Image 1: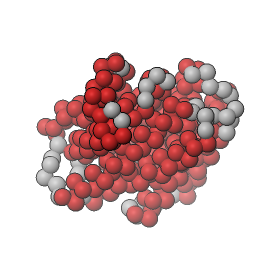
Image 2: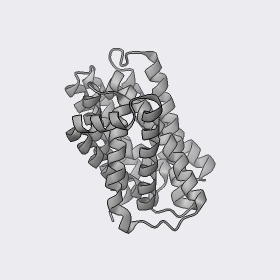
Image 3: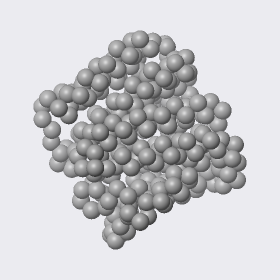
Image 4: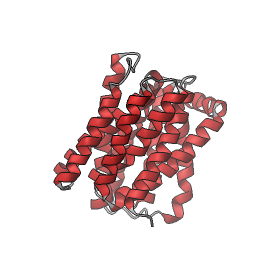
Length: 285
């Protein structure tokens, strides 16, 4: 098994790649329909890990995993809307920075995690550098409401992350078991949301056929991302895993997102990205 920090970095690269494909596709597609489509495919892919899962778990564990799935499903929708209507090279750093602030605080309060002074300082550096990227260049979003949604998505992500770590540490649920149940629950939640507000299963099926290559690619990347990220979080403090697991993701989206979608101030964002790399390196040495 690779060290937790290698798994965290690998997961970040996978997430960055999937986000780029998502942003490109969302220029043409409705956010809810698209996220529902790949949520169902990820749930189906996760079933290949059934031989490695252990479902001898408590009802409390199942209930908490479902609660997390509701939060994650809502976060899926919010971030898809933000990426559709905003700058991916600005939104992704903020989506990394704010949970990096919330997660250590919540981990200290609810999980009893404590880090060294230097580690907190480096996390603070990551937060500041990533947050500054958002305010580099021209206006990054079509409407201020998307900034509010991004902040809400960041808070919800931090809460779901702490819930995941609690389930791993205190309820003895393995990453494979967690992955399968979570993805099935997310798929159910997204399908219900589509049925209540949009075109239902028919629209999901239509969307999947229309963007089958993009959805297949994102689904495979997301599944690989979750496996590497969950095992990293399973073996290390979440206060360290979350900030580290977002650094390559941010850098990928700053450079490639800026180039592919012609988003501005790439040089200034790149300079801040170098600071991110240095702080991430210092966290784990």
